[in-house]
Image (cartoon, rainbow, N blue to C red; front, side):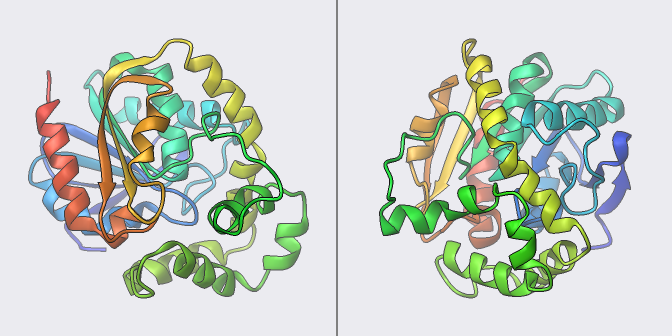
Length: 286
């Protein structure tokens, strides 16, 4: 990590990488990633915004949440950490993957504090299309982790000591190019999720998926009225992200990032930074 970015601890022990100057921008990575997922967009973002890239509770270097991994609770913990440091300042919020699962209920519960929301290639609980079993090969390759990770005990039994094998296969599956993930970031993820208990903490987000879905369907009864950017990798969710987000928001824009799989910030950082900065500038209100 470049020395110009500072790693700090926020309220509840939430780890944050902080840098830049300007209006606040909160970045939330997914699983199996850490705040370093956004490393390649820190530089362009920092010229216009003060960013806070967070490790969600239980992921990366943040401690587990005390009251469960459902995203209504996790997002509340993270919002309290950000509000503690930003005081009354409003901020932009962006989440990728599980970070997108967290970002939506965060915005739903604290909409008055948030200028805009970005959701990047995330199957937000409660809004996935109904699936018929057995799944097609293509669907199973995309969504296998939702079933596997949610199982009790078995994921730990099969992955303990083989974290590198699993994550290598996982990232190769979900990126367009085998070298689509920067090596230093990949090694950071391997290090983080090879620690005792780290994989279990990631699995807990999937075990809480059904609870999070019910919470989100309740939140969606009052759609978000803030601007929302929905981006998907062209070889992953793609422009269907717009349709997913329209289930819970009224002011949605976005589309697909070309030549990109699931890991947008790592695979296509320049394109993501451009789209994000364009969106943020258009919605930079006091």
